[in-house]
Image 1 (cartoon, rainbow over the protein chains, first blue to last red):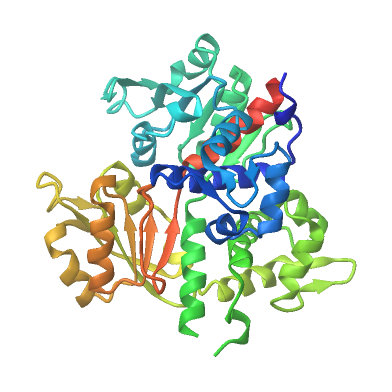
Image 2: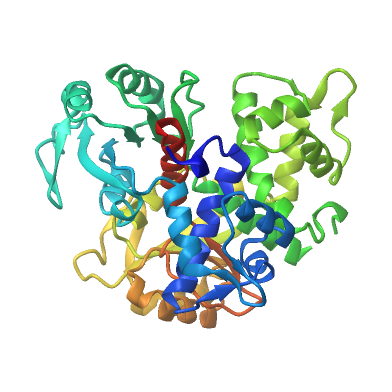
Length: 212
Length: 212
């Protein structure tokens, strides 16, 4: 049992992947230390908030050097449970589902992509890399047998809620939702909504400011 | 010139699409008013922060009713410049690029998808819906001629920086970046990084808490 990962407030959980993303880039550029001020510049959070967030998990700072990027990344990985293996399926093998099959981010975060499902007979049986597209009819049994934790949902809006319910009944504990539907799930189910259009909103907002 | 959209701090801009997303869902469910407390529950931000953010743009509250959802959505659309037309291209017509062609979120936010580019001869000339995949060789001229504002970048990591530079030189003012590369762009260029793996990080973190 790890004290560090108990009951982290949701609002901090939202910021952890952002710290992780920026620190990883810096590590790839062989940078060793970073100050909370530099991290504030990169993330848009205030330096005092960053110091508070990071002190929540331990002491990574070295006076006058700043934070040790390598140690901080290691610690963030542990806090975010990347060492805890998780089984994933993708439901919906349209363009977005297929793009998700080719996502390179799973292994690093402890996810294993176990299967892809669709209802289109033209897709069923095809392989994407070494992953076979299976019929949604097999989905629930597969979730049970392969102990699937998370389902990425990229089905059409009209079947999103029903598909989510089937997945939950079969035993998934979380849904990575790309459908842009307001899914209703029980309180004990993790729901992570992925709205790519948020990026478009932010760009539009910034352009609007420049042009006014 | 609209006072409301001048110099909105970056940190508020990050929250606007999140308000918009939740309010839109509520409007679709025919809800008329919402309190800052309810909005806090949905967004994870504190109710005092929400009141502060929204008062920044005007007064949408009605005592004992809460905020008028329709008015707030209208105002957020204006603040985020959805009424300002923007031309978009997608560079990279792989799985993700093709998924982006089929994204339904452009029109609502004022974007017009004008073209898709790839270097793969097998893709060039094909149509995705009514959008023809063109050669990247034509990309820079197209940006100039069609007055493209934003390029969605879904090219392989190895060519991401070079492609971004070509686009910027040709005249785009913003890049919607899916490459997960640390792009270097001039200060006057808007860069919006879209990291879908942030969702996976948050799910992993929450699962880790449940299991510890």
